[in-house]
Length: 298
Image (spheres, rainbow, N blue to C red):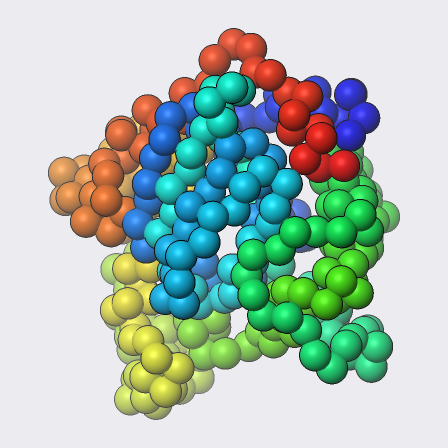
């Protein structure tokens, strides 16, 4: 990776979420930490740059080391342990998300050329083309944007990354993901106001369904309204806690909790540690050894 780009990447806050198309985030941890049952609502690609990520899913346990990637399909919850590299003193990873509209456009454009068969193993050792595509994508999203052309370039880089994965014959759950299930529609409705006192009939009306129909369709997809509401609130809470800039009381309010203590108890029950304990795990020192991260990206 070019040194100036690397400097920009490592100068970002702990969680540098990119809210425009093809969102991406940089995670850095300086202490070993385990987070239980983390929900994922959209397909994600995790590229470990330093240290290792120990992952438990419903399908097994995996170790994703620096230079390797891990795919997470929508509707999945994973338990992960981030282990800092002992020589460098930190763990670092980039997470690339796929939003529903981008996935739809991707499939419309490339369905006829995508391989009929793709590997579904979540742990990937990327080839040179995939590494270059990731480098180009990360480079593009760090550029200051002023117009719609920049968004288009970001999407092209994102598509190139997904196409590179397809050409390597991996990441079926990312490349072939088909958005639009009822659970995703409910999730995006809840995201509109996570702090609201949501009830199933509220969401059903917004989706032009009866409450019984909504509950039945969610049951057919293996979930329920109450499970999705908790998942959405906890996912938002996790992101806000890891951002590190918002008071815990404000996070509780933003996630629909009137009591910070009840929020902290729910957070601990879900993720296995308190909000403050999680924040303590990613305190960033003044200086970070960056070069090995460059080697992992390029």
